[in-house]
Length: 259
Figure (cartoon, rainbow, N blue to C red):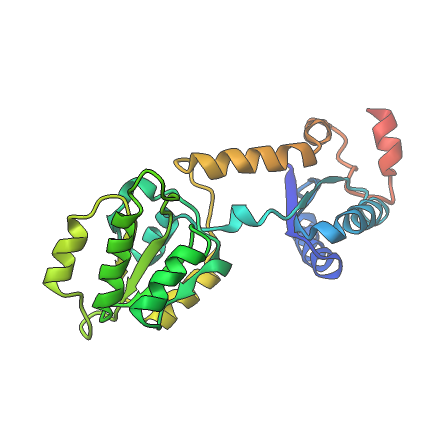
């Protein structure tokens, strides 16, 4: 089977990664149908596309099948992703498990309850808040603010709360747990990690496409489809010319004319 090589944006690093994989393909006699450069910075898009198109043709005789500008939303984890990351489940607000949150807007709450309530009202509505399990005041304040915004004239409440505490050392009180279990709507998750560990894991995490996350899948298709040359991909993978990876034997332009 033919192979499409994919590398993340960046001129030097991307070409180095591709060269390593090209050598492996050559060793195992695997034909390379083309290359796709992913997550290219928008302000570097034209430069990257032009450079890689010329470099791949001249060096490998292989076309650039796609150059995809970065879209940060596709890298934003949904609460469903965090459930899998922490091997936990939302204790309430399960209907919002496919709601996405920008990691850059994640907020560790160490302030007073008053300041936390101000943040809930002033910061972007869809913010992921992180607090320690011992902060009963913040947990109750989060639930109370959710209830307050149920009024007809209030803006939608889209915040989520991640409650952190290492297993065996801290645990949420039974009274607060009962109150959370009785709450509908506001997403709350309890994880067995310190706040620092939890935030680090989220920052290092790369969410994958999930067929059940219809919003992200739809956005990904809409974003990627216009930037990939599927006609050229099909032409390459159905070609019987085994020399199309050897620029010394036939040029890319000659191959196009032959087919």
